[in-house]
Image 1 (cartoon, rainbow, N blue to C red):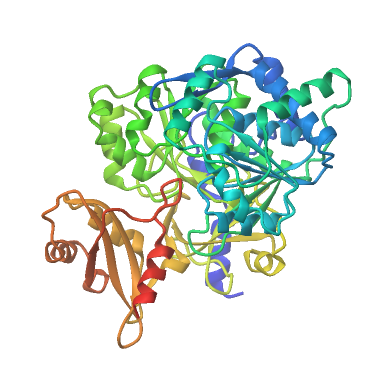
Image 2: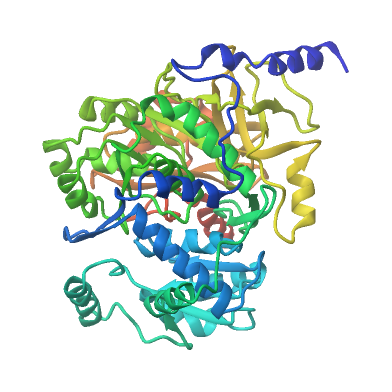
Length: 575
């Protein structure tokens, strides 16, 4: 080992970030008292039984709620149904394909109480995507929102699924409102005829209640190391893979989140608005699980698009905590109703994609509190680092590693690089997954010598603050020079005529790549020449886009990540 590597290793081993933790945050990880997620749920339900746990708020203002006691009772019923009626056994997988609604936490907690493995599915998947993921995970049961029941025929073909249950966004509403919502959806032809045999979630819960009365079920004991969730990666850079997260992985990350956010969370007295989908690991761990164990109220919005869908929720409930992604914060800041009466939010967490400094500043000026950017992945349960609410906020950074987490920046050989240099971000900690489901080759590439290689290019400053430069796979090679799309996107996003932008590399005529920008215009008169000229004012010449393609919209994941891979695929097809 040469002196440079030795010095770099010593820097990361010293954990410089610990000296810069915020007020009230312990530097050592304090484990939660629970052995499994079920224990955590039961503890919260016992302590906060009469409090409201979840409220669904539709874009028209109709809302309904479940208390902690309701969640405990209904999830017991669902667990009994899965275990005793469907004869599922510990370790079997259950796929859940739903937007934010009251049925979601009931399903999740019931699955875990039965000792089963939750597999989160995006409800917007095409039938083909459903089919591929169902085949990969081997789920025996699928719980699907009824809005997409027409996908079942193709989606179930040649899978292991034996039973399909249908849920509704109307679940949890009183009978009259439930009937009204379903009638309206049917009149709008938004509830299709199922293309496979199904049963309603309501019937399943009723059968489960009868089984409990007969004394035929009690929660299944599981160990800390047992698999709890099969969380498929977002697939923004390739084919989605199932990250295996144990009860211990998720509990460790909840303990880490609690230590960082705990000083500004008032147990039993917070209202968090959940616009991001709960089937995404960020909202699952932060919005749902963290605030559930703190006895808080979670306001669920089925979809944040368009952002006006959130208006009634913000106006009806005293929202104090919020999480989102850059594109959502940007959109809300330009909604007249939001600007006219900004909510009294005292903690906002940004994740999922890079937060632009201009958006963070605008949010603070409007709402009055800082936007705290963090970072995580499906493979890390998810939180790795965050700008701490009680610490120093460094715009453009993803903050400091959470307690109990080791981080280092490495080169292509896996050796640590000197502080300040760019390299791949590697993570080690109790929240890191054990591997990819049925993907030993992918696991071997991602987990090396106890470290998870994230695929993200990053730097770390002397205080331990991390900056994501870009995805390793997204880096553009322009005549031997590295161009990071995030940097170019942030510059172009500063043009007043730009609403959204994505940057990719396209094959050049003489080898290498050239920079192309895809732009959604805020100002219809914006031209390609004007935007390229703007880029030349702020970027070195080789980083400036050689062409600009204007679009009405950009492809995105449900949490707002722009899918550069889709744009690259399109560009490749042109050649």
